Image (cartoon, rainbow, N blue to C red; front, side):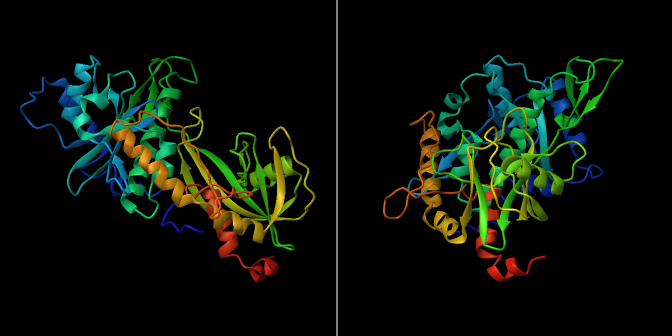
Length: 393
């Protein structure tokens, strides 16, 4: 089984692509001024609030709803500015313009999108029970998403961007230069030190991670590995962080050598993917995918990094794609998200059981279509033929 996506999961954010340039009439600066004026004046709730949509988050989980029963589809639980203000006032949470993080805007209909962390507020689900919404973690939404549905994929990308920005604010509360507190500026897209003698500005940090499928082109095999944190039977590509002063290609070679003892020659870029579901200490990760061609083949696993690493034949990896029931996992998780939004199930543990069609456990499986590793492997199986590998120099 191979799933073809127009863009990787968490990529293709439509708000970013349609947001006017800062020099245009609708920008984050003008939007923030409108928001600030809304809170600085004693706003009369009888009058319409600005055309802002707000996406609440609780402990990194976006507010979502779900529709449909047989094949439920989740959607983001946007609130109006007035709905958000009323709810937080009931929860006795002081709401200011600094509570919001700007996500983008659409000049065509003058809609401005914001995110807000309501972790310290009351029970928003009960307040909005008629709308059937709940806070669901992004990892579950990633699996529950119908990857062929462009609208849901767009919602997932928006949720990923918002989650990354909000968690960056949490991890950057103090100045790394002098230790004083920081405050949001530029509608939450930047932070600045409050120390008058410092005033250092901070920008959201993106941590690149190289994801590499190492290929033995002579014998038509792929190098896959297991980490101790993986669920049973799951194998994936190698991965690693970039060192200071290092290129992406150099990181691929170094990480492969350190973890498996394999010497890599040519490194070929494939694609990249935003990854806002990594550790909270690194909320803005970017997975950069490569194909790497092995020059040596004897494996020497670094047990501090990996549990195991092995060469797998094309036939072995093809079976892992053929029998892994990703669609089944997607539908099962979508039903659970639907139950959460209706209050039937408050939480659940995400457990992916990929089974063979015969009902027996598959010997191995690889990450689902939501991971760039899946598409590296799928590309090797379906696009890079034997002749291409043998003729590659």
